[in-house]
Image (cartoon, rainbow, N blue to C red; front, side):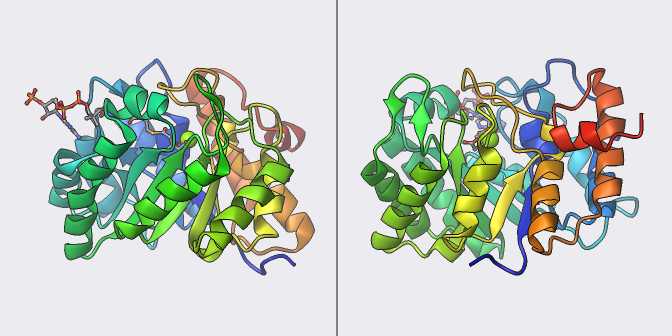
Length: 302
Ligand code: HMG
Ligand code: MG
């Protein structure tokens, strides 16, 4: 069966924008988050407290985050932020963030490219981050990248994913988001991984799925995940995105495409599709190119 309701974890302002070359002004980012919240999204991943040289687009996190939590910011919305290490956590906690995410990799190649660490070293780096975040009362998400395939290493075995997933959850992460960073997953593979995780003692209801739409499979993959008990789905408004450290990663599953499918299935999301599309059109104007989302294009007002 399918869940009655799905929580969409909107990643547009973070995963969507992190790869944009031209720096998006901080007021535009703040407005983007506000509009997403107005469209009914209850979780909007706002930015990353990473090294500014690694992700220049998000170097304004200290300017952006207080705008979102101040009087002009959206209310009643969770604003998770990425923190790779204690330095990132300190920056986030200092601004009052209580919703953070660490981000690990199944594969050594991506761990090195994204974090300058081995898989083992990254888990060691995350341990005090998760501990201290929990002590501060924060909700902690763990991301796990390259769960289906890696651009350098090729296919990724299920048991490797189960192993790193369990270790991230054992650190104390409240939820774990399975990333198909380069979008190579297909629906049968998703079902096989979720079954392997379940067999390995990972409760699928603690999982989220994070699909990139490189091969146009993100919706089919999402449906397979929902049939395995997953109720949290990551998506990016307008299908913005990519990853600066993973060649061939295209945009995330577009939030509009997801909402369109879920509406058709009678699954509640709380999102107003018209308002969301208007937001993606507004953002497309700011970025100077049209949204790649099929649903945005089909329902476009232009
Ligand atoms: P490093 O070079 O190994 O850093 O990078 P370090 O620990 O050696 O520190 C070097 C210097 O950086 C020090 O300064 C630190 O203070 C500073 P110095 O003492 O030399 O003056 N530093 C920092 N400054 C600000 N904020 C920080 C920070 N940390 C250290 N947090 C590091 C290691 C993890 C920092 C770096 O690799 C990094 O920032 N990586 C982030 C990469 C990233 O954001 N990638 C995109 C997100 S992941 C993704 O998109 C995938 C996902 O969507 C899921 C999917 O699709 O699969 C989540
Ligand atoms: Mg991603």
